[in-house]
Length: 301
Image 1: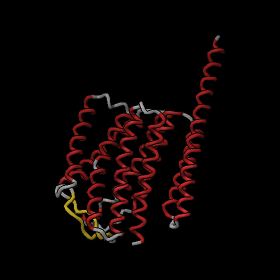
Image 2: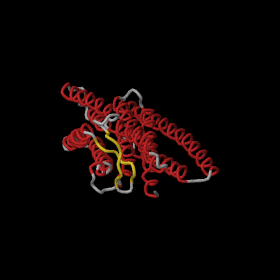
Image 3: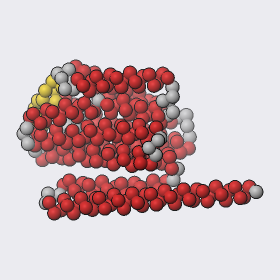
Image 4: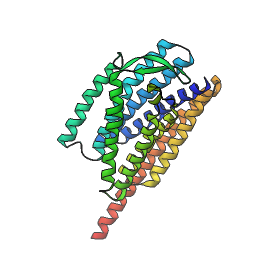
């Protein structure tokens, strides 16, 4: 059971990190389509990760009905991640305006919705079984297998292909942004891939699940860097986010109520102070840019 606790922790950690970066990115510019697509994709990761945590908790409680329900829930959320990632990539590369890509995305979105609904039937998740150290691991139905092949592997690989193709066509800061997102995609989806082996009776534990947290972190930082063009501010924000995640980990792993309350207070306080600091830094950056623009205009006269 100690190992199951560790995997349960990976679920709640991934949910917190994905939710945190969804909030941060949409707060920066809620009208920006790239930010919107990142936020929606991250929320699907939150749903999957929270369900993952509840599924593992059902195992720790030796409650098969609870584990089965949350296994269905995590499957229903997870099938949306590849198509929402694909839409995010289309927005990033300014391909969303292309009718060919838009129609393709909507077709996959409809297919994904149908597969998500099927996760509550035998076509999606047939039941649960003993797999390695886990007493209640899901059994895949035919539609879930199609999801793994065509959506998780196929659609994500196509998104990565588009990134690689465009990395070689651009330069400067945007090239660095694409390289960062490409790295985050490979790490995050590569880590998530380890969850599928036990579905098909391959004796491989989902050890890569902890790497899923790096996915929204790296992509979020890449978006901030791309939109700000200010590496100092990005590093400052990254340090603040690291503090938040560190305190959250302390909150989850502590066992006494007094320690949890203390860490909860510390987390809330650090988030408030961090957001105020980030807001002040943005204002400072805007004022400096306005001053530089004004000085440049004066020098021209």
